[in-house]
Structure formats: C-alpha cells, structure tokens
Length: 429
Image 1 (cartoon, rainbow, N blue to C red):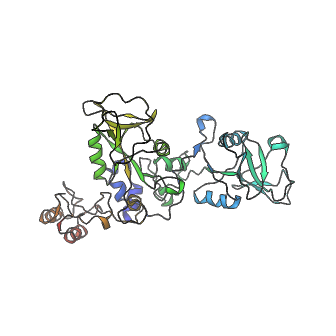
Image 2 (tube, one colour):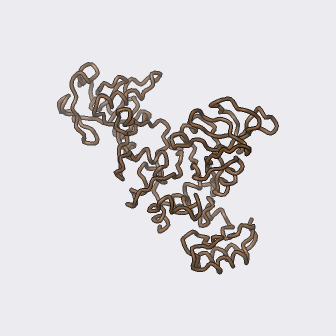
C-alpha cells in the first residue's frame, strides 16, 4: 500500500530510478474491472466546437433503469440534454444506416405529472422545453407507460416506454480534480491513471495529488477489446530492434495492431509516431509480417511503403501506419508497448493485475513473482548466487546503489531484498 501511495503522489520527474518500471511496481489497489475508458465509440463534444467538453457513448438497447445503473457503474449517467446543441449532437451519434430512430436518454417523469412540467433529468439539472422542441410538437402522453425520454436524429425529444428497443446514450462530465478537463477523457488517453478502469482517476479515489503524465491504459473485453494493456514509452529509439529489446525488458512486446478498432483505441490514447511490432518479410520484401506471428490481415497504409530499405513499422495519426525508418536515418520514435501475457491462466492479463496490486512484481520486470522464479538475479547473469548476495550486502541501507540491489523496489536495500536473493538461490530456469 505504501508503494501505491508513493506512486500516486509522485511527479513524473520522480519516476526515474527505474524508468517506466515504476509505473508497474508502484501499483494502485483497485476493485472489480467494469466497462471503461476504452470504449471505442465514445466521442467528446469539444469546447472548441461549441460544446461542453463532456463525453458520450452510444450503447445497445436496455431498459431505462438498467441502462442508468450501467452508466453509473462506468462513472457516468444516461445523457442529460440541456440545450438544443447538445440534443442535436447526441441525436447525430446514431448513424443514418442504423434502424434506430431515437435513442433513450436520462429523462423521466412521474405518470401523474404534467406532460411538460413533470419531466426531470437524472442529474437534477433544470428541465425546460417548449412545445416545438418535441417530436410531433409535444410529448405523446397517450401510449401507456411512456414516461421516459428519447431524442431523434434531428435533436427533437420524445417519450418512450421503459424497455423500448432503442439504444441508449451514456454521458460523462465529472472533473474530480477540478482541472477543467472531464476525467473520462484523461482516463481514456492515459494522462491520469485509472488502473481499475472505472473512469475515475486513481488519484481522486485515493485523495492524493493528480499528476498528469503518460500512464498505461487497458482495452477491456467488456467494451469489445482484447483485455490487453498498452503504454507509449517516454524513451525514443532509433531502430525497431532497440524498441523491441526495451519492450521485452518491461515484460511487453511492440504492439500488434490487427483491427481498425485496435488502431482507433491507440489513437484515442495519443499513440502517434511510434514503433509497432511489424516488419517486412525476409522471404518476400514486398510482404509484411507481425513479430508475434499473428496473421497480417489489416494494412490500410497512410502512404505506400517507400522502399525495401525501410523494413520496420510505425504508427502515425494521419493514417493507420506507414513504414518505419531503418538505423541509417536520424529518426527517433517511441515504443508502442502491449502486454497480453496471462502466466497464471486466470483469464486476466498479468500486467493489469500488477498495476492494480493484485499480483506482486518485486523486481518490476512486468512478470508476476509467482511466474518469475529468478527475481533475485540482480546482475542478470542467469544465476542467483554470491554475486547477487554481495550486491545486497555492499549496498545495505542505501537506495540501491549503482547496480540497484533494491530488489523489491521499496526504496531501501534491507532484509527483504536479502530474503528474495536467498530464496531464489541457484540457476534461473
């Protein structure tokens, strides 16, 4: 728990003793994972476009009460449309090819109330609308049980039944740290940590200072993702092999982007100008392959691959990708890292469990201790022996020393580190 507190309160400049690895070692204990920041269809009504900065997401049909509970579980609520512009923005979320004529939002009324004055928003915001802002000129109020609100593609309101078949719209507006930016977007793009994926920054949940930075993000299965975690490195690399080696030291691989949804998820998190895990085929220079061995089936290039002398892949925001540059050019890119391992076969990607404090990773290598029998190999020579023991004893009471003998990354070399070395004595598997 102390490690979690140090992480949440630290500035980016504090996280330097083990670059990047501190993000894993200093984890935040969290509750259950719910559908989260990774929702691919969430869009923002941007302030620069005349909006309110809130985020909205079109979801499958659900009964009104069930939908409101689901929205609250994700840190939001059924959308409240308090202006003509907001009604039109939300109505336009439904594509013209969709058979849904209206979408359900967060308004309801008591059955015995007036058809105009009896409506309320789930947030308690003021509800004032004129007759001309309703479909057909006014609420229907004729069909039984139509005491819930919907909006059509033109931004006109209507009443509907609690369990209509129309889709629903969620809205997020919370700004827990009062920085003028809706939390949902910061959790979504990784500028604030949200390791339990509930769309509330961990710093707010733990009542500590929120430090904007670049934090890992998840693409949850609950919203159509793969359950993997992604992170854009602070370091830059001249070649893809350098980026591969760095990612491996973190227990990750370079990201393999096999669908449009995955690409859009990375773009939403600010991934741009970064190494991906793709390269030209050695057997066929006109073909491409993933380092992971996954099929190469998604390849909408931003521009045509330039030449066989540029064998590696990068992601750019002007298009899904273009070919990266070789080590002959002065081009530096960050590493787009992806974690997918599940070493204990519990159906959850290990990296997320490390971040949430559910699995220990005392040497901060991205591999849970239960799956890493060689965490005491301080000098990384494949053995836990007298050399590692000497490193601990020679640096006793310090913060780690030149070779960093602080095995468990708690800020001091002491008996805990000695115990790890002794318990792991012998050759690494």
